[in-house]
Image 1: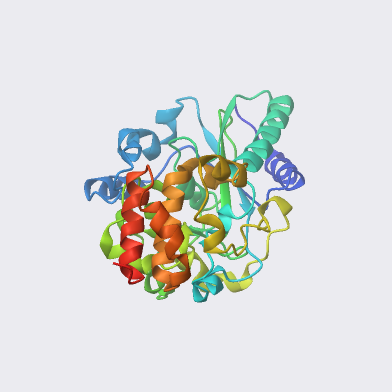
Image 2 (image 1 turned 90 degrees about the horizontal axis):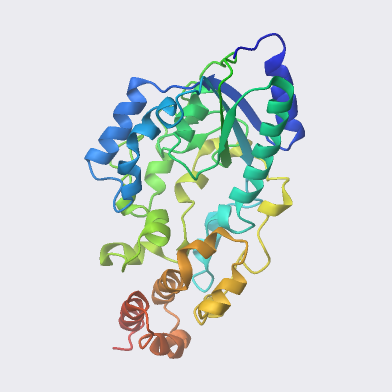
Length: 347
């Protein structure tokens, strides 16, 4: 199915009407450089324990492997820019630092709702077939977004936009329509290495390459066991994700705070006290993080992270709580508690 005329203008207007901040179109294919990058990432073991990345690599390499009928991809972006630099909380060890994207409601729900609305409109207007994706399928969102002109993949491997800096949620619509493609965005990182220099665990072996096994976002969210000792001090008070490389990008000077209320920090997650989080049992955890992406890591992994932050805080007033958790049912919680006791000088 092909389409021409003013279709791009109509699609863009509809996307903006539905609340998307960026829009672009690209062919349903990726370049040889993108494919080589994915394969090197897996070959070098930089995916750590995220085996699903290797298992469905062919679909990540080429959109048509996932859906052979795909001819074009509509890429959409939603700004989630914070009001303040998220690194400010790093100077307050008594507080927990949660990644900006997880301080509000789960973005998957909001972005997918808008994608489905866009998809229904496209089907009604053009009779096309399509599929929508938001971070839940083997889709090369960032390379496709760069190809569609939304921005470029910076040296931190994340998207950078001249309008929204490093703060974009991405959604993709694969369609069987042959749509007019936009020009890809040129790389505008230049000689800057601010993002690489900002990483507390040296997770970038080279510009445009990341070793997930060293990344605090991976360690606090995806990694299920005890965090390796070499990274625990560097975690500081980061208990869910890390924004250091994103926040360091100079292009953020052009970024705007998100106008979407759902992405604004919930009162209890903007700057929570470590002491208010460390005592959560499973039921309490589920209640506090209902509707939050944090809920998916479960109570044990979350409390593990909080205990590491307590160990880094130097605050001995947390010792009674830590001592109780040294007898917790969870192996990772007990391990973290014993480490924190040592750090706080109780052993």
